[in-house]
Image (tube, rainbow, N blue to C red; front, side):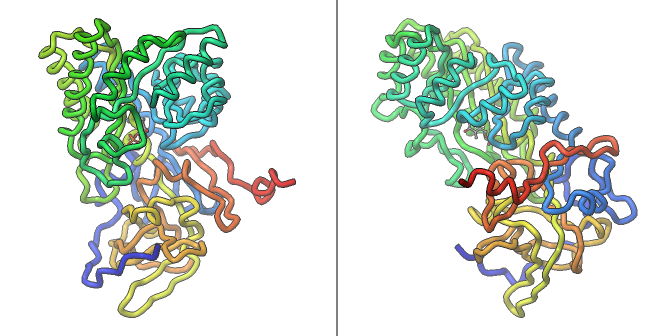
Length: 451
Ligand SMILES: *Cc1c(COP(=O)(O)O)cnc(C)c1O
C-alpha cells in the first residue's frame, strides 16, 4: 500500500515539544533546546547507543502501573490489573509488573517463556489466544498458570484432556463475544459479532456451551472474559460490555445454578497519539467499569465478582518513544517533503499497516516551533514505509535526531527484520541514568538460526 495523498493545505502548528500535551512521557523536558526524558539527554543517548532506539521513561511506566492498581483497588477491593504483555514485552517490564503487584496476560508459549525466565509467579499468569497450540496449552498447564481463557469448544476439549493427563484441575474462563461495537478502528475491534475470538452470543451459542464447560472434567469454570477492542475513547462501550457480561452471569446462575466468581473485562482504553487527542483517564475508566459492575450486579442480585481488567496500550504507549537519525531529505514539489530516518516499518509497523498517527519532534531543536509539514519515511523497500505521515516538525537537517512519541505499545513487539534490519535496543531512563534492558540485535543474531 502506498501513502495517502498529502493534504497540501495543512499548516504547521508552530508548537514546540512541551506543547504536545498527553503524548509526552511524564518526565519530558527541554533543556538548552535538547529533549530530556528521565533526566537523560535524548541527543546524547542517540549518539551513544545508535539509532533507531526505543527509549522508555521508567517513572512514567511505573507511575501508570501504580495508577491502574490504585484506581481499581480504591474503588473495588477485590480487583486485579493484568498487564497485557503483547503491547511491550521484555524481561525488565515483566519484573516491573511483578514488583507492582500486577498479573500478566500472555498470548502463547513465547510470552509465557519470558514470564517464566524471570520467575514471574505462574498463578498470576492468564493465557489468551484463539488458537493456542496443544503444545502451548501443555506448557501453560504444567507451568501452573492461574487461568486459561478458553476461546472455543474445541479448545475446551483440549484443555480438559491435557489437564487430565497432567493430573491437575485447571481454572478457566470462557471468552465471550459480547456483540458490543466499540468505537475504534475496525482492525482492532474484537468484540463485535463477526470476530474470530471467543464464544459468540449469536443463537445463544455461548450460553448453550456452558453445559459442556460445566461437564468437562479437569477444568473449573472460574470466570468470564471479554475484550471489546483497543484504542477505545468512548467509555460507554465498557459499560455496555459490563452489562452484557453481568446479565450473562445472571442467566448462568438462574439456568445452571452456577455462580461465576470472576469477571475479566479486558483492555482497550485509548491513549493520546496526537496532541489533540483527549483520552479518558485511568481513573475515569476505573470509575465507569467499577460502577457498571456494581450497578448491574445489584440489578440482578448477584454477589460482586472479582473484577479484572487487562490494559496493554494505556500502560506503556506514552512511556515509550523512538529515536532516529535523519539520513536523507527529499522535497517533491506539490506532493510532499520526505525526511528519511534509519528505521521505519521494521520498528513501527502501525503507520504502514493502518496509517496510525504520531507526533514527532527534533530532539536537538526541541525548544523550537514546528514550522514544516513532513513525512518521516523509513529505509525499507516499500512505498508505504513511513513512521509519520504529514505532521509538523521543526526544520530538519541531515544528522538531526528525531523523536517520535507514543511508540511504547505495539512497536517493539511487532518489530521485524525486514531488509535485514537488526531490531533496536530498548533503553530505560530514570533519574539521569540510562540502562539498556534489551540490547540491539547484531548481524550475527539475524542469521544465527540458519544452517
Ligand atoms: C490486546 C489485548 C489486551 C490489551 O489491549 P490494549 O488495547 O492494549 O489495552 C487485553 N486483553 C486481550 C485479550 C487482548 O487481546
